[in-house]
Length: 226
Image (cartoon, rainbow, N blue to C red; front, side):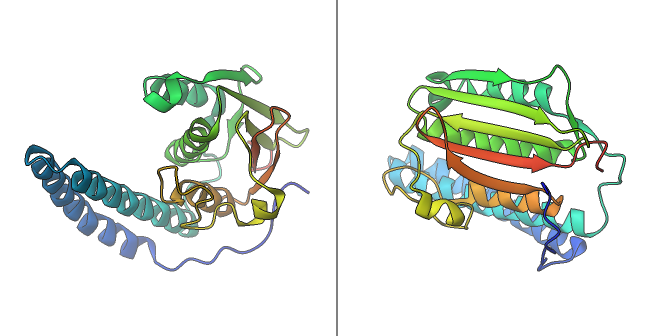
């Protein structure tokens, strides 16, 4: 079976998370302003620390909003989002960043594949996976989209980096886990991916890519299985 029936635990109601999100958005604006002041004062290292803190807060809020929305019964069963066009959209954006522009990206997918996810949740999921691949890849990332007879969709992302030891695969996606302290990041990216996948009843897995690096795969409900 592709999909897990394990119940997902939620810590906040949708209204609580929305209220918290509005409150924190004000704090994020203050942090952004403070970071800019520090840059102008010639303290770029402190400014970068504040930017990273703001990013961490934003991602945690987004994480809880996703979980609360799905718990509250949204999206409706007829929600559908096209996968390939959103992949291409993200890659165009990522290709303009220092990490993404050096990567040779390859997509192997049908012309059109739809999943039963809200568009914003799919973009959050894919964006974090692609950013993770760009961070660890040497120069090549391969993306494959597969469908099953019952409509479920599998997205596989493989890179040619150094990979992750099998002993660590089960811990990938834990909040705050970083396997290389020389790389920037908080470990929240894959944690957000895991929350999105599990909230929609999907599964997330890891393995060794034929390219030599890490293989990440997600299995999501398609339109026939929604």
